[in-house]
Length: 261
Image 1: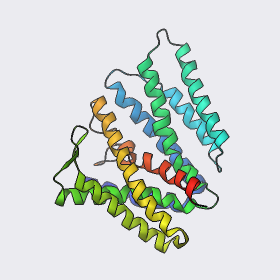
Image 2: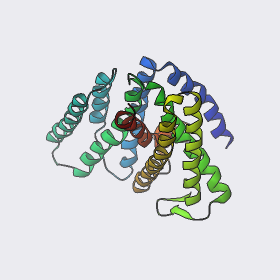
Image 3: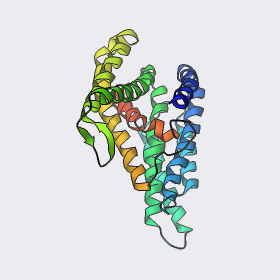
């Protein structure tokens, strides 16, 4: 626990600096995080003799970073999807035998890790509501914190025992309520003109973020690992800290696009 707390205390100032500065600093940070995260994800499957293509994953990150330095368009996203799929197909041409499992995990890593993570950048470059990038982290981490303590003190009914034995229904509900509370405070003090939207994002984002947490647990169970990495002592790898954020970031971004005018 002591190592976990020290690691968090060292990471928090760096996180605050990056999000406050945003711009090129955040773009570079997400680029580096995506590089580490895709490596962690692919390495997890090496444990069960599935060998996704790291070169394709790296190229997909380079391509998306090249188009995400400004507000991104639907056409650019579709072009990136097409290019990523083309890279996977071309990569298979140079193999003596088609490995459908490795190709599938390569595609999964590109979309689940890279594309989802880059929604952080999409939000930061939004012309009107870039400050809602804070909501991505507020929702994810408020949910984790409140779910942990609610589950610890009141949890009795298992949520998904086959996936994550320690998670409880009470903890999940506590996480949602905690996320709504902190999101409401953020909305009231920072963006009062869209206060109600922040409350809604707090609730919906928490539910979706917990689905992201469970999704990461499914992958880890399938690969037979406890953590994705060891880059953050006491916390695991980048994906272990960003598992819920990978789902929360797209939820916040598309809520902005479709519901906030």
